[in-house]
Amino acid sequence: MKKYIGEIGIFEGKVLEVVDYKNTILILFPKNFRAVIFKDNLSLFKNMDLNLEGKIVKVYGMLKKYKGSYEIVVHHPLQLEVVK
Image: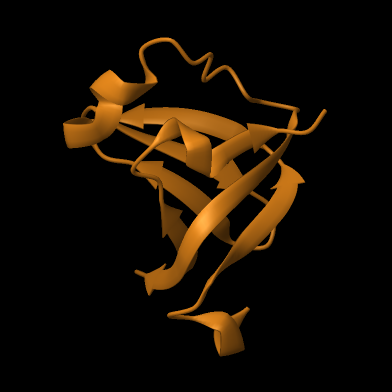
């Protein structure tokens, strides 16, 4: 994943856990990857079921590295797609 930092792309994987940490949602995947929804954007997700544990999810956006983990910051529900 390192070579894709700073690029816009798609990550697909099985969600291991969804954590609500100080009004920030962390969607944790294998391979040290996470999708992050910051509190400023949470109101956009009020109609979306974020109970994603065990589901296959696609995340669209720019790949970043933060504190040793790879992540995509999710600004809008269209960046998340439940595949299965």
